[in-house]
Length: 424
Image (cartoon, rainbow, N blue to C red; front, side, top):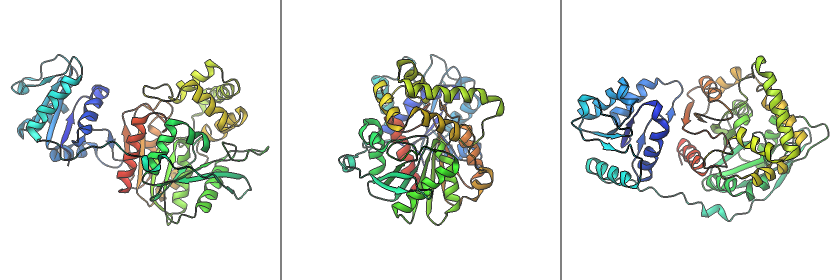
């Protein structure tokens, strides 16, 4: 049961997010439609959460005063004497609700407005029962990672590492990585520390990337990526694991989990990509994209770097990666030729595996997390995949970010959701 159910108009989502985050930071639990559970009627989920919440926070705006949904939810809160109304636009609430004084924050959610909101909520609910503390990752922050090596079944030399303690969480390789760069770059290292504080976090570099081997006959088909992951799973020696598929690592993660149900306890997919083949009419855009990638890698000039930042969301507010970091990351991961080949073979050729046949075979609890406004991969990829996996849960978060390791608040949210999902 949440302390707060937030009722608002969808057009105001970005303005409501700071209010929800603030209340949670003060220790109150909040429900609003950041998450959707696949296979569940959203109407019923709203009704259930509304009935269970201690307080209904209604956000009046020029949009919400016209919404029948918001009026109905506000009426429920008023009937239970549990309504806390606020104004984010200079509007008059609907007539039935004007006798309840609304807090006016139409001039901004500043410190004074935050203090007034805490006072109003405390009068109704009392002080929060949970004290929110900032996550402490000091226990792993000073650890050193040990680079280990193994070989795939077709004799490619692969680098891998494991850090932290707890249930084994294995990241399925997405497009590219370099274990040493991730460890030394501040923002990506923080995400590693977050997960390593509660999991044995296992990462690896696939063939052609980072510290792993690049052979002259390099190929990056689904079969090669699957062999790489199998080799790491054999090398790490873990009997039971949580599979963590990021971006285009999703098809590999889903396939391995379906084929090895006795070794997987949970499946988590973040920003699932490469699940739905690119429509034939869009192939010219795809060709332009991977040629641009190759040019960016080869030149590392200002224009290509900025283009890369825009395409991958590294220029979003809160991103902690600068031009120098991006150039270094590009050079550390692999050559320009390999980068373009990975794009062409792996990311823009569809999943190269029939997920419609494989995904329904998943027998473990599955969570899919995707940014609602992902700049690189539309959430429809995760929505489609979630519809195929029995009892999968889909969480859409209010962000444009695609991948972890660049925006601290996004990384913390993802970490907490994974911990909650697996029960630690």
